[in-house]
Amino acid sequence: MQFIVYTLEFCPNCEILKEFLASRGVSFVECDMASAEGLTELRMNGVFVQEAPVLQKGDAFYTAGDLFAGGAFQEDLVADLIAGA
Image (cartoon, rainbow, N blue to C red; front, side, top):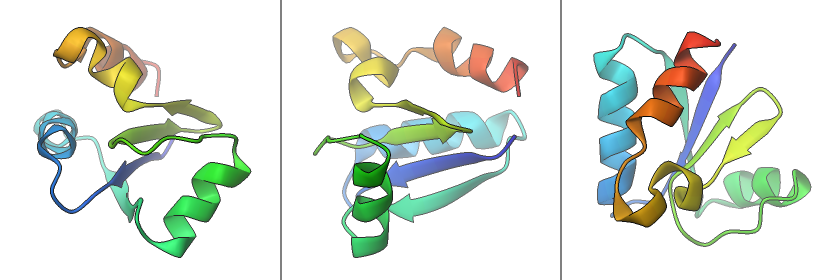
């Protein structure tokens, strides 16, 4: 299953997520949240956020609030998503 990472240009959390995925050999597509295409894709899927990153796996979307709950990267959540890929 393909992962899509929605990012913004100056986003340290985006880099953390991308590095984590890459370190585990997970391929992903990066999409700019600020682009019309990226914003439209998120909106059409009911994702209304202004904070990056957003991780998409199939039809499921995980926002920065999910991925960085309490201000800390949720490695276990992402590792579980990878394992279930």
